[in-house]
Length: 256
Image (cartoon, rainbow, N blue to C red; front, top):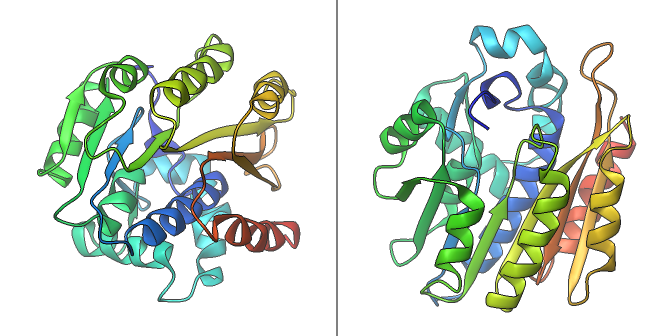
């Protein structure tokens, strides 16, 4: 959706949940010498300024990464991505998922990013010049490029869900991608909403056949009246150890 700007939400509690587990998955996959493909359907701008007016307006980063960064030791894959972002953009920089991915990909790997917003596309190209960046509809691109080459790899599906049809369209996209790319690791993020609007999507994912695990966390609203009260990350063909990492992170959130 062209009106959505993740700069207002970067570094929030949902980003911490999503990006920490994304980093864990990529770190493990990168330990094997075989090359891989990493794809994103909703890439955003890759690098965000937590010192900017957008983050200050919502207070979501203050309730997220500002509070939670101490959970991750320096050698944690997520901490490595945080450090990489600050080397690129200064001490107030925060990595979007493309930077998290780029931190852990190797020269032999392929990075494919889709984004529709022209300003976000321009920022992507500036931050990660070597990536394959498409100013295109992410779901359509995902279907056209799967199975990718190299076939080993991962796809992150991370829409804003501001378009109501995404709640039903995204599970259908996942099902189609899995049929075309059965060996691919697929990570799908969704918000947990006080309204319960996420429930049909979660139920559809739970009914899918095949190897998949789910991580859900809950957290206090970032501000009065904020509707997001948690984060869900569903993983098909999750790498070894991902489930254990998810349970450990869930325990951290449960203690908030």
